[in-house]
Length: 429
Image 1 (cartoon, rainbow, N blue to C red):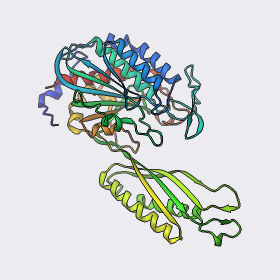
Image 2: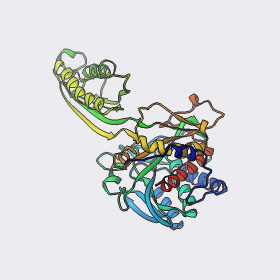
Image 3: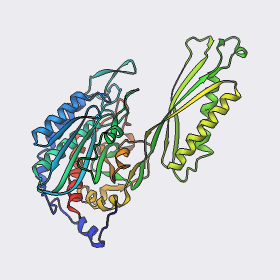
Image 4: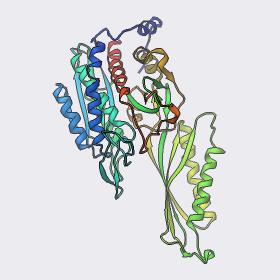
């Protein structure tokens, strides 16, 4: 899709207030809802659910949308919820997305709304926590739905997508954005553009960061299974030791990054996150399995790594007299912000947050399955600051950790930004 922006258009957009050509939203409409959004967020934070198991969360969202008079579809991609809000006149269709799932992490932050939830994950009991801020995403989009439902004097349609399983479907299941796309979430009616945000620990409240084109990495999951020969630990010469071979493979994988990837072009990451082998201290085991992730920001580099990993791992295993199986599974594609859409909507980000609070950043090697939506329609994804200004950005706890924390004061800007992106996009010819 091509967008033509008059040269005078950007300067005019920069001086927009919160009054749009169609559908007026006053500041007090936003401030009036802030306490509600925080209350919703606290409820969601106390009641997190794992991927494809967001049953209570989806029911909570669906009830809210129905109470607003929004048309609601449930059970999309297992537990997803889709709301449809039509303006007073026909026009284009814009989608707004929030992800709903929590993580198998036991919360360590001492909050009044701390999660005490537990669940089974890969056969093990674990705590469950919104350790990546998806509770804030859901609460923000619930707030946007309420604001736009009360200010629906616009041409077009807003589609609210509450997505399950962004963190990945359980083993043996399908889910997430890819399944929503497969089930037609971007059709009926056909979506023209999509917007999404992610709360950011390590970025101060009030800030927005973005990047045109490739912003977040493609992710791939790999499994390497090594089959050797078992022996007593006192006679290693009688073995084909999969643990020693695994250590050589890990070292070899890092050369694909340090010696075969043009890192001045884009970043590449290969990390082994799990190794399982053996059962007793004096037995050299017969087999080993290692699991890890590949992150790339360039499609050609992605294919090179995939091909070379198969060659390298097989070669090392053969040299040590073992057999090996390499499995590489696609996770997400590159989170790619359409450059024309980004240019067109940048003035909206700047007018809502302030010119000095919106910053273009370099690409990061985290991954987001929002990329599946962007493969189908033009999309813009951005980061919303969640760290209180009293804390240095560098000292903020990382995502996916027990100490992850988001300040409640961050969410009102998220509601304003998504609301205004939707209205400004629909207002354009």
